[in-house]
Amino acid sequence: MDKIIYMDNAATTRTLPAVVDEMLPYFAEMYGNPSSIYGFADKSRNAVNTARKIIAESLNTKSENIYFTAGGTESDNWAVIETAHAYKSRGRHIITSKIEHHAILHSCEYLETCGYDITYVNVDENGTIKLDELTRAIRPDTILISVMFANNEIGTIQPIWEIGQIAKKHKILFHTDAVQAYGQIPIDVERYNIDMLSASGHKLNGPKGTGFLYIRDGVKIKSFIHGGAQERKRRAGTENVPGIVGLGKAAQLASLSMDDKIKHETKLRDYIIEYVTKNIPYCRLNGHLINRLPNNTNFSFQFIDGETLRVMLDMSGICSSGGSACTSGSADPSHVLTAIGLPRDIAGGSLRLTISHETTMEEVKTVCDILAETIDKLRNTSPLYEDFMKR
Ligand code: PLP
Image (cartoon, rainbow, N blue to C red):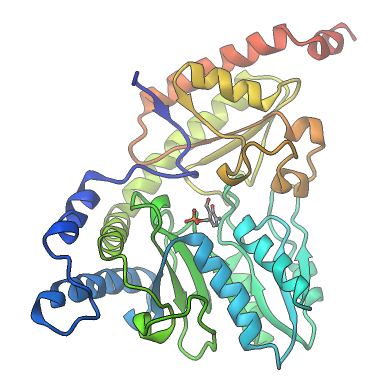
């Protein structure tokens, strides 16, 4: 394959060679089942527990509060659906935001079919949740607030500390989907008063199909996957030992390099934002200018069909996205761009470019130049643009 420039790190990341190296012995050499009692299985059990400890320390919690899952979707489903079931005698009302990932939104829709009442709180034009609206939504029967740490499409980081304080004051459980934030920015579950947190390995240079749910002790959550007694009887199924080892290694590397990564990605991100907003007319930056993930940029271009733009960038070797990888292929505008108030035609001309610590300034400059040329080409063949310019 010809060289590509990968600018879709919010969809997934490259599994780092150091992560793969750490995983490999757990396929064919140390393949014991962590639940077995003989010495050979100790190696697998210890490896799982080491990964658990690394992750717990990265969040400022205890190892016992980390439960391995098969990814962000499972963690989100588990957190929302099974706390709802566990606390239904206290109430059946849940608060979330309009810009959550579908792993949360569809879990909430499922709960609605089971008789739960969900409030979907609005966000402002930058994608920040409206805290006054969230506070007003609280009722005596509210059992859970679930708000994402950072948005996967527009990168806006939510006021998590404030939400944690609101939840604490009203004695409501607080879950956050930190799939895009964990490993990218520092998270301390104690400081933020987070009761449950979802994360996914493949967003932080770990393997796909791995993740975890942090559950504060004392939270009564039911099991989502039923079977054996793994994960302290809360998540059945033989552990994905190589995957968990890889997730632990990725978490360790992310923690160790976080400051440098943030510095590097922020510099590249800000270059893209400045270049695009200065050099490409009729364009809008989506998401918060400051409270934003270091690796995320998202723009809407007027008089541009986003799908065509992405195909043309692909022909130039650039991997980009229109928003969530999970909704690509859908003709509907993204629910996130709709929630921040973009009209359908503007939302339709959107592009997400997400970088990593491995992205270089040279790549970023190449992408910016190709993007400007491509937009120019597309607009020059657009009757809508021609009409607009004649006015
Ligand atoms: N939540 C958010 C915010 C995400 O961005 C994603 C994936 O894109 C998920 C949940 C789902 O995670 P996974 O792909 O590990 O199931």
